[in-house]
Length: 215
Image 1: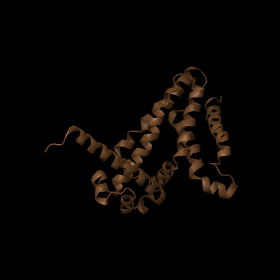
Image 2 (image 1 turned 120 degrees about the vertical axis):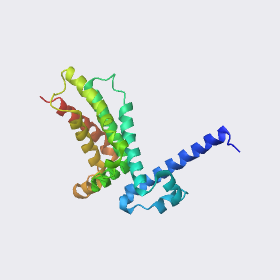
Image 3 (image 1 turned 135 degrees about the vertical axis):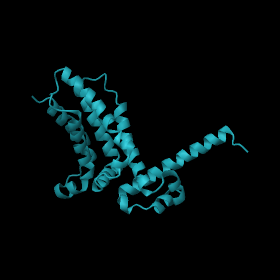
Image 4 (image 1 turned 45 degrees about the vertical axis):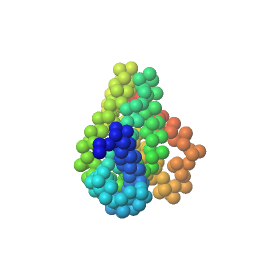
């Protein structure tokens, strides 16, 4: 008997929900335990599915890990692409982009841990992903457009490119989460203390703008 269209659609939705559930749990497990420490059996238990089903959807542990990385990076790149800065002057546009990265990294600590873990592995998994290799340009397109507008307006320096700015913003935002505990133990300051949040968010924008407008 041929499945009815509604039944076929529901099966697709079930598959999408299952895949999304697996990715969500796997993200937490890889972020908490690292690539080597994460266990497929435990991920299966926490998703009420089976190891066989995970292999069916993703192929294996490495493929699942790469899918987690792809989803994490694609999400932040998507936010950057959706940022509406065309109506802002270049200085405010840079502040908006810096604030977006600040907010995202603060609210997605698993992303920061995954990045740290992948650096321990010398980015060997990212290097094998065609999806992740295609995200370089989207990461810089918005920044490049803002910088070009700022140069035309005579407010931004000429000797800085989009990758420079991306590096500076990322370094600041990643540091807050990645080094929260060591920084707190040494200096007795919690970098994610809510009372410091707006000060640090403003500081990031001030730093980047001051650098870009320095003569």
